[in-house]
Image (cartoon, rainbow, N blue to C red):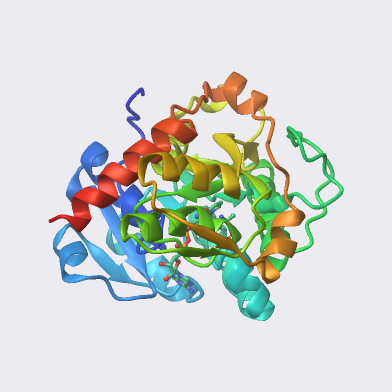
Length: 321
Ligand code: NAD
Ligand code: SER
């Protein structure tokens, strides 16, 4: 990956979430420990607090956000604070507030303080049941059925608006379900992470989607690579800005269980779909990421086999220490 000369002082919002916990150390290694300010509404562990600067920040408080950006002389934001799909359906009003006003506050403060670059991630949740299930296209009419998806479409549109109207360099991509050793935060794709946790503990897992449910997924190292590659890409090559499709891998819940079973033969799964099945059924099985490949050279490194191998090794190592 080429090294950016432009991102000097970075703020990460939602840094204690599934992605932030892994993105923050990677950014610190790349840009310097004291140049990456982590923030979240929750309190960090002692270990996290000792690993670099942290600010307690509610993204809905625009005055505090502006203050943090000024105090640290921030020029780049990775905005990860959000409410995910499953939690969002339980309290749609809260998801609407955090996801919409969170993005609006970030964009507005970044515009006002003339920041260099802003990352606002989107999701496969922008697609709805009318989208073709296989290779969901990049530029189509988006009609999601979840409140999370609706806030993500709005976030994409707002971000693109700030780019075209104000020249703010906002970038974003539609991540698939992210699989990681860090715990997931209330999404529909959480089962793909939980399966690993239960398997390494020698426990039977109750999966909340059907065995034949296929969704697009991505392993965390690819997720981090995609964010950094997009943020370091040459602006003149980008035709899209805040709404890139990015692909990783696609498999059914049953295929993932079988992949884990190859390594942990005693692993068993029961399938008991709940309200999250309805959400999963509205999303595509795979997405077409040709524009990300053309505009900033995207390609994923992991498939289901290499991802499962590494996940089990890492979790086993943690368990045995
Ligand atoms: P997460 O739920 O694990 O973490 C979100 C973090 O935001 C949490 O630590 C939470 O405390 C914080 N937060 C919530 N409300 C806040 C507020 N008002 N102020 C400040 N912080 C607040 O989410 P994640 O999985 O890390 O996702 C990060 C981003 O990536 C989100 O925009 C999400 O929509 C997107 N995304 C995630 C996935 C995935 O599978 N994890 C897939 C696609 C897109
Ligand atoms: N993994 C996320 C979720 O299930 C998709 O953005 O909510």
